[in-house]
Length: 444
Image 1 (cartoon, rainbow, N blue to C red):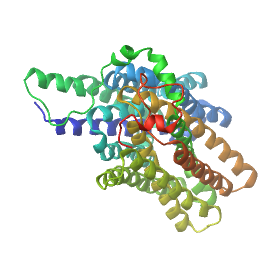
Image 2 (spheres, rainbow, N blue to C red; image 1 turned 180 degrees about the vertical axis):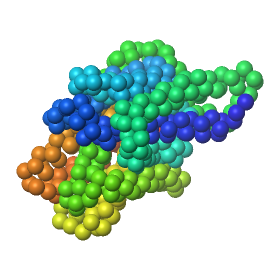
Image 3 (spheres, rainbow, N blue to C red; image 1 turned 90 degrees about the vertical axis):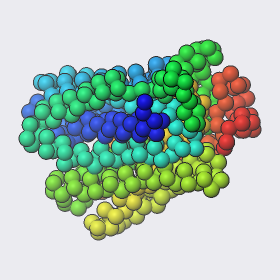
Image 4 (cartoon, helix red, strand yellow; image 1 turned 90 degrees about the horizontal axis):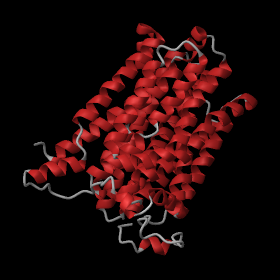
């Protein structure tokens, strides 16, 4: 039987691959934007609706998905989600009209919604609290590797197999990965059960999720509602707004920025954007290493995450503000690379916060609440940027707004993220008091 380390490695590789496919699939419409408008005779306003349909469906699906993931477990929830969104992606290669495309984009958003809350829950099951930093950083590097690979890879598929073939290829890839996950992946509970049957016991007992435990504690829905009584929940909710606002500004407008402000052709733009996302990937991996190192130096687990997520937001804001007046192409590329490094440092660390601040049984629920706040802001970012560019003629105001939002989110983490959230059975009406949270015995 494979060792614990082997299963942990397999889990991280699976989750990283899922994250890359997740971002390839959500990026496909942007890559084929112009071609699809011509082939399907879709107007620019209709294309705008299609582009926003995903993010809004993704945001509003977060809240119920968190409860579903905590109830079903990450294996079924993540495998089923990957299968649903991959079928929607594949079917997008066969549609012939706006209405059917809109429906599939909504389905894609709903299907992708469980991805990162499920990943957080899976890492929570397989890794001890003090060792989750590095694997979380590796898994969340997919949020940069995907956008980095998307422009050249999806363009290659589109040129050789048409935009329809591009959707079909990426969709089928997801279906294959979903089937592999459902057939071959073992949860931590399954692994421990198999060891027990052989009379063995692994070193170090990480938390194991019991699907029925939440219900035995009381109302499943009441446990979810209880999260909203705690200031740390609102810290993650409001703090993540700045993270995703800046991330989605880059994801949706970075190509347009280089083409409009610096006159780059689409081919050059694709490679510059991909290069910038390499720095983002460095930020996600560095997040895990920084948090793990801080813990080894005696910093509390939660504080190691808190300091890192705040530092990343401030770092991103500091290197974004000069974009309001710098005009040199080289300097702008350097500033954007550093801003992406900082904001992705915060993004990966924010998910480590979720894994630290709440009990195992509600990790996906809190993660979904955090993601809901983030993607509400993320849905607003492209619209604010578009109006800003239209009326000012430059991206300067848009970049300034994103830097301000990032700094406000850093303040939210600083002020509200004070202590772990007590379990639902321990919670009381005065759980907003930080001293109530601090006596729960977890390492802050």
